[in-house]
Length: 235
Ligand SMILES: Nc1ncnc2c1ncn2[C@@H]1O[C@H](COP(=O)(O)OP(=O)(O)OP(=O)(O)O)[C@@H](O)[C@H]1O
Image 1 (cartoon, protein in one colour):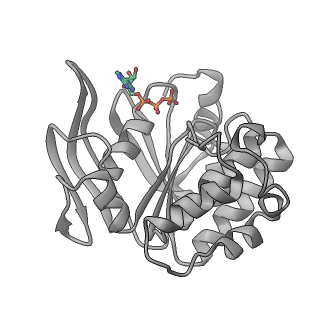
Image 2 (cartoon, protein in one colour):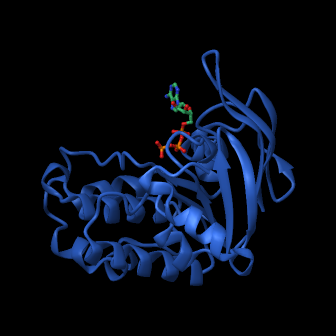
């Protein structure tokens, strides 16, 4: 279980998270949804150890990892795919993947397995990072994270700005990765993708969890509200 308990996060003097408590169980797909600026990305960064907690605790399987650095969190089987994707533009797609294998011991995920998950990446393996499309970059960013052999994969808006046909490939990949035993913590502003792949949802607003529940607890009113989030509807 990867957990934040009563977490406060600040950017300078501005408080972004107010006592957030979120727990992601092994093997589950948990979605964090909420409108722009609600604190979704900040929550993922806090889960990853990329930003410090002013208050509260981060735990992994009950052990306190609040102060664990980002590289150590990565070695402890947590991986973050940021919305910026952070592909190294001067390297080929395959070189980007190779880099990830250098910093982690070999495990289930290999470059071959990443290519099986995203055949398009095999075709584009010699292409420079800068020449990859948005969808290819997203596939590469997910593949690179998988090569660290995470038990918890944190995905920040993986389908944002992508064409429907590519979104389908990303959705299929999330489902496959989840079936392979990796827990996925999915951040999306748009409710359509989480609706399909997640079993549990946390709705964030102004740095707080304002609702959480399972798929079967989403009634028509909540469904309409969540579906309207990306159009700017207030939570
Ligand atoms: N690097 C930063 N420096 C200062 N403030 C920040 C920074 N990143 C986020 N914030 C602020 O923290 C709050 C939460 O932002 P966050 O990016 O976590 O929200 P979000 O729900 O992920 O929204 P979005 O969908 O726009 O990414 C917002 O008020 C935002 O302006």
